[in-house]
Length: 422
Image 1: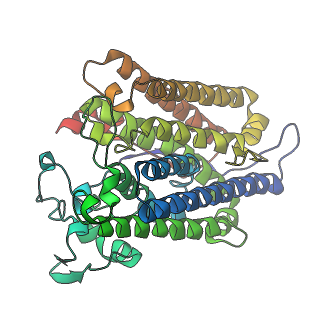
Image 2: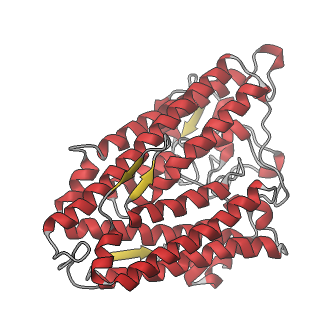
């Protein structure tokens, strides 16, 4: 992706309210940011543990009800995790780790059976239709791989991003999503994936073969998700690597906060996750494409950006984590800009809320992407425009706080639309 570079002088002279600035003010803002990050990853871990329990129940006692319970747990697990994505772009520890848990889109044929319309191996990805669930042994980079037992080590060590291909996603939320829903073959019509519960049944009741191995894969992937979330939550705890790196340099820490807000708002969400799919009229560009949960992913990504600016997060149990915020710093320098930033964040959340409300009322996100669906396009573009507009105010915040080194990620879909079709 391209980057839009913003320059300025070092962060200095900030203040809380009408008080003179002090080093402790910036430290308070960064400490609250780290506390919120820790809480979000703790909540992501807790909801992933609930998901694992539901998956274990599905494997132990396959039924339509238990499959639905696992799907419900997966959707709930996405709520705190999506709010954490704002930490990715400004914090190297998170960015280096994120691909293990949230990489997308994926070539699902690597994992399990797919419809004939999916096709087979390609020049870009010879493993696109490997179907490891059906193959207890295969060759990878000229070496034989023993996959007789599907383990976290196999998924993480051999399959994930195999041969250096990013679409070979073998771990994380979206691999689990595919195993719970299966492919969404509805195109831009209403409807999510519809994997039958019998894909996990025993004996003659098993559909599509390899039900035991499919269960092994699902359990290995959910177990690995938990261990990955345990690791990242610890990084934000006292003495953790992410917290330590953030607090080591106050100016760099504030820069990281704004980099995350701007890059998620602009290049990632407005561009790669929303505008691109609309330009291509392609439901494969949905973030949660198997479950049709994309409306929620967009909403909670946007909420995560707002969380960082306001310095507050509502935990899954209803507790509020809050404290000193970027809003405090900006208000001390330019109260009008702070009001503008707050207003634009609220406008974006209303636009993303309209997408969420429409989807929950029956107009699914993939329908919004359909060519000729003017109402759907207006909904999606409302979110895109709000995200772009708030990024312009984030740029003004960078200038007002005299920050340098903020690089906001771009997207061809926003910056060079003709390149999308080349």
